Image 1 (cartoon, one colour):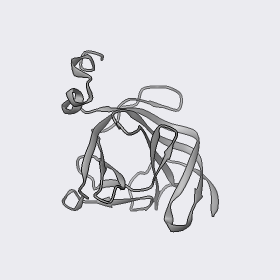
Image 2 (cartoon, one colour):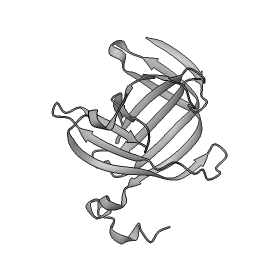
Image 3 (cartoon, helix red, strand yellow):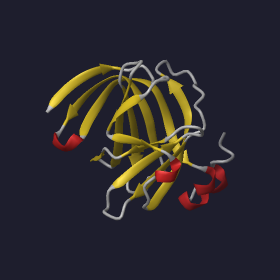
Length: 171
């Protein structure tokens, strides 16, 4: 086991290594039972100021072997398929660390209510500690967030989530 404190700068350009996730083109995405489709909303920086976030779709699925996966897709980019996950209380937490060649490593955390997976939080950490385990899994603890967003059902999933039109008129 190793424990590391890392400083985060959001990944810019340049190729990246990934811990706990893989980058995949849309044609190669894994299949499984889709649990929910979410999108980031109400994003803020570490000072609480609103931050615009590019169009992002987050899909949670469960493979045939029962393993949950989280897939983050943005137009024009390969998808981020996060397989590093663990339960924490009533949450299912997915975590990935990107290691770009031109910036410091970044922690990406997706914390979902479970088993419904109809809401949650997305965060990128400015500073975090990670404990790595045999087999490549890890748990990280953010000590400062550089970005925090709510994860809410996508418009097409509102009726399935039982939110109806209330969410549409909430804004």
